[in-house]
Image (cartoon, rainbow, N blue to C red):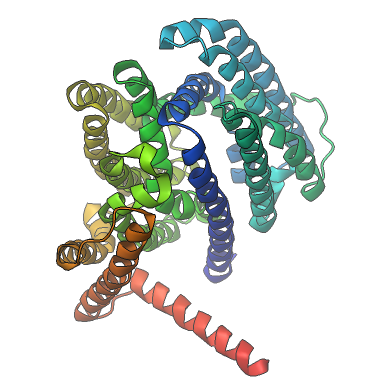
Length: 501
């Protein structure tokens, strides 16, 4: 397969995934705007703590068999059936484990309400094992449009059910029951868009189990990455801090969740196609990193700058004091995504031993550091340590990926320095402009007015600065060239459409 058709497939698939995630995020934003005014931070904190407690067991037994199927050159029916059967067995064992330990976990976390929440969350996740194995085939075939439709339907169904239950009960139970009831709609839909009649089979169990040992180790580290902050805050600070952190992260991590996360699947599928050619894989890796870095950094810095306005507009009066958390969560999510961007390289090159060794080392370093941050400064201290360790992790991960692909950190820095300087200039310009603006009322309308007055000039400053640096450097190949090409081709298609009409 030539580079151009593969690159086009990856780009189109990434665009579809981003569009789908944008639709999902719009639903999430509306949901947050409504629920933040119906529930208190402690309600969100309770459900987040229960979810984190369950996810520890979930991640420690997660299989990720889809990665095995995607990266295999030839896949048989027995592979799909084995993946479905082993997921089914896992879900049964996980459900029993959660049911037996729910009350013990509730006592450990200091709130008896966690036990029934754990069982409900566990049931919702266990039902996902019934999904059609044909969904793996869609990923191999780059049919991400169909996968996106299912994701949007899942989110919309959960949103509607959650809001209805929230208005009817005013209880934190709406946050878990909506997702559970939505499974009745989305699981059958998966079989409609990806028809497959699964059969019980363990024919390929050895290959899947061999891969799972690495998945288990990685997921243990993922617990530290994603859920240790919730568990640490819940134990050391309290439920309001847990709720403030989790809601702040949902808002602040929007650039990462809507751009970096959705493109991982098509990028990984693209890596699998060129894994035999180390030079092409290196170019694809660096190009993808540079493009995402240029897109994500200004959005992340913008959220950090506008955190006070975002707090007022998105959350309302019940969430006073979350602005610093929103800013720090945005910076952490960005730095952490740059580290995770490298993981697909290790997987596709079958360097799971190196991936696990690096991941375990960095996780063991992060955990005590964030605990100390929480002890001394609560949620703010914890997040400061999360940002610091995320930057350190990103450097280590890119150094390790460079050793595999044949480049150094200088090559990575060449992709990052122009957008970094542009973001710094934007930060200074927006800060000066904010100080020069007249004071506005502290309500939603005033916050919206100030946001509008700051966003447009900040975007112009960033884009102008980065393009100027690129032009001074001699317009080398990179993210700027690709983004300009996409922009001009989009304008041309739009012009042609109007001319034809």
